[in-house]
Image 1: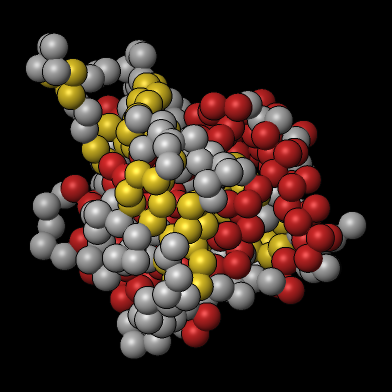
Image 2: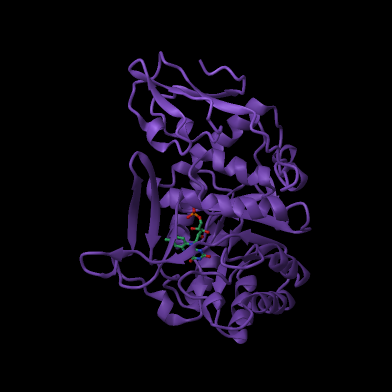
Length: 389
Ligand SMILES: Cc1cc2nc3c(=O)[nH]c(=O)nc-3n(C[C@H](O)[C@H](O)[C@H](O)COP(=O)(O)O)c2cc1C
């Protein structure tokens, strides 16, 4: 059986799966539930200096189904606020977590003053925290919304200040709402962080069109879902070969394959919570199992055997992509059910009725859209051959 252990921020993790900072890690009891299912580490629900953020409204969760006819996806929309604890109670929880858990415990802080950043970091280090995550990117309130001219410089300044305050490893949880994430990550690295987490959730809005008001609690909300994996994957694949610090992937993990994708892009660990909110802590075991089986199938003995394989030079650049139109669509008339979906979506008028079914004409551009919409997989892309009879 493959060894799925990893190292992250200098810590040994038995699994690259980390329970992300959220309600699922809000108390020692909940952290224990994650540990029992095989989580590698926990990032504790964030401690906010701004006390108003410690109270969450009810209800605060909404699963928004997005249907484009048969194409389904969902948005996990939420207004869960910070840990309800004050700093002293939070510190107690970390003491207790360190006593009762065997996995690394990483508290998360989000402050509004320099003194707050320094005081909280110091207290949590003294409580025995294995590392610290700096939540400078929370969609419900963090420096990304302060209106300061250059939030990236502010993130870097805070990182440098916390670095000079504590000895334990730190990771900075980055926002996806940055113009140049790699430049910011390099700045964070220079400021002394041991790792970056790419990326926190986005702040967004949904509207009830009958009430003509924001849904749920009436304000903006954090939102994410399986669709949110692609943007962090892209940046991790670019950042991992050039940064000397650890990268943790987060956002959109819906199954073990998503964990594999983050590691292939170069992540050392993967934080997730939506899957736990929606499926329960048991899903952790399933992800570990899937990851181990995939590694066995591929013949990988350790995470390092495949980490970063799809990063840097493995990603083709603008000038390297093969743009020749070497393939066209072909309908298998035996399988075709004559639903007409391919004809409807063809921008090139290349799908025509034929003997009660459909066929492709020689004007086919090879775009592949018909293959994507065919409900019975009757269309394939084949090598261009001039023979459309
Ligand atoms: C309900 C909820 C609460 C969250 N609370 C926090 C938090 O307190 N601090 C933080 O850094 N991230 C928080 N996050 C972000 C998660 O830690 C995680 O990075 C993000 O949700 C992406 O992972 P996912 O796609 O598995 O949800 C929260 C996410 C959700 C859904």
